[in-house]
Image (tube, rainbow, N blue to C red; front, side):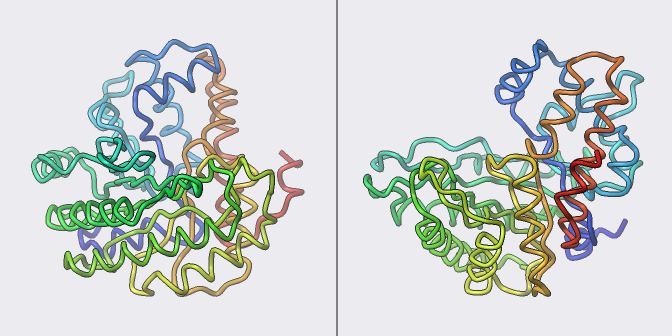
Length: 341
């Protein structure tokens, strides 16, 4: 594999392939395991992730890279093979989540700032040695119109942190995924999501230019433009697609390596249908694919249930969801294909 940042970024958004976000923190994966009645231990987490990484059909055909958590990038499979080597053997690229999470922004109730820049240069050098060739940093922008959230300060602080992170990644030979997530949790309408996302992306690219980040060696991991969950409105895939592409054409440089959407709490099928609608109205200046966590993993997690006897069924469930999103990344998905499974 070439080590040029632009080549790694291009491989991450190869035709019909997308990213598996398997970077849940130990706290998050415990919540997911609680739902399926599995105790979260280092071994159970490893067994679950190994099950996915060894799903040959899904990994070789549909997954371009895997975002890992610090624990996972250092773990070995049950037979002693490093998990990173299992991922590489499928042709997928190992990546790593490097931020330390969103914390309250002092002086701005309701706003957060993502931490983790301290010591990042040294950690990136370590992750490079462990096999990571891309990284991820998530900024969290909540919307609460009544409280004036997000503030311009929050958007600016998070965009600046993303740019500093991205510059450090590129210095280390690692492609940065920049993830400015405008949350879909609120009661806001789709127009408000559009405006806040526009302000966020405009500021983000101003900061990335200022930090001298090479855009061709970056991947954007954005939210889609959606009405808030508490608004009571569900936007059609066509409306989501139209507003999301309008937003990107106004704010996102054509030079970037590609766009890999987060699923952000959408259901499995919703995330697939919206991605498909976005690609169906192309061509676009950028490759548009998926970087899904729960929207790829919920079905295999349920099928697995912590039992070795269920590994094949869980891998089949993972392959199905990965294939559906592969088709959506090409604009070729149809709802009938879900029933066929």
